[in-house]
Image 1 (spheres, rainbow, N blue to C red):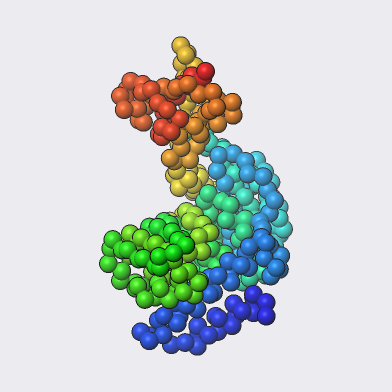
Image 2 (image 1 turned 120 degrees about the horizontal axis):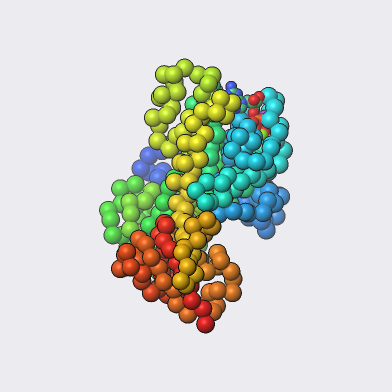
Length: 366
Ligand SMILES: Nc1nc2c(ncn2[C@@H]2O[C@H](COP(=O)(O)OP(=O)(O)OP(=O)(O)O)[C@@H](O)[C@H]2O)c(=O)[nH]1
Ligand SMILES: [K+]
Ligand SMILES: [Mg+2]
């Protein structure tokens, strides 16, 4: 039996099983099995069929944003409107057949926007080019789920399921659980909070299902059984997401207002050029980029060419952003701005110092 059939069988068994206290552990075990088979399906080395690899598009710029949506919601129209790249737009479905990258330049950052083919329900199970699309989504720093404002609300949930199936967790933090394999000593579970959504026995059942008999687990938040399985699988991607409703020119003001009030949601019209600037500003915010200026000794900082980095970046990342020879020959650095302990004066820093937005940095080499 192939992996796809096994998945089907488990899904059917789960659907048949009534949810109650007595079946809780059995369901937990089935869930764990299901997660394992789905992970297998997406392994590049699996023998279960073509690998879950994305489109071969070079990463470029400071961050990557992927456009995910059903056919004809206006993904290519958005790319054509916000970048210098033209992607074919047409009224028929599946106009776009491959990944098309464009670049948005904003506040000194170069953001790669990836136009992708439309996906349909079941995409993650290998229908159409769907699996390739959802695999590409995994490589993004931000996902835009693009929806047609004139279509039913159901669309959004279906897309979320497709991304969830391949291990993408949207707008979610990685569960605060430390998991360590051991060679002996049995299973130790420590919790710093009270668990209300799962319990010790379910966790042990799942560990047994994975043949894990020796490990230390430290749980620091009130996780669900699914969260715990995610920790065990270990390859989940936690990616921020914005829901973008296009074609608001074609709906009533009341419906638009209602959509616009939903969390993480932006309403636009590509055709009428409505709210596109705001969308780009929100993308920038979600990406958490920091901009750092460099300064040569005795000169003014170079404000024309900032280095863009992800939040949490260090002086080492700044060095690598200038030239790869810098970090190996690093002597010391000077930082002005919010990350300097002595702001408005400079602080002398090492490679591991974390920079903040709008810092000015001087690097001195050996
Ligand atoms: N009314 C309206 N139509 C739009 C808007 N944006 C795009 N369209 C139309 O929607 C249709 C589909 O646009 P595309 O950009 O090709 O959609 P897509 O999501 O790239 O489609 P696929 O590549 O086939 O998945 C075209 O006829 C566009 O002219 C909008 O803001 N309002
Ligand atoms: K289209
Ligand atoms: Mg398209």
